[in-house]
Image (cartoon, rainbow, N blue to C red; front, side, top):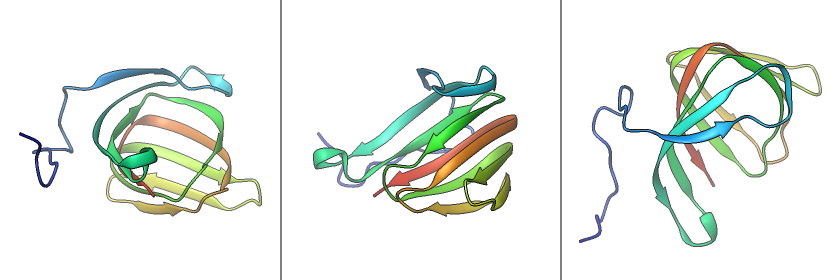
Amino acid sequence: MRSSAPHLHAATTFNDLVDWGDQSEMIDGQSHSSGRLLFKGPNNQPETGIWVCTPGRWRLSIPRDEFCHFVAGRAVYTSDVGEVIEVASGTAVMFPAGWTGECNVIDTIRNIYMLA
């Protein structure tokens, strides 16, 4: 039976993650991602889940609106227009579609996300 409201208990510490591979467009280091998809709607919209990523720095382009609630780790996002966004546990960020820049993961991050 399909859940009427997909959910995960203890999402901030949930460890039954799937290997999502290395980050592309690496600049420094070799970040590796894992996660768990919670829900994916028709045409992949919306999509929500957990994303975990190890240290490294890479280029980033956000294809559609993405809300991120960081629940662990530290990273710095630097936009191509020079805005610096430092994230740590408890930080929430709304990246608009088309956002471009770099992500520098300092300590492995965990993010509860939703793509619109």
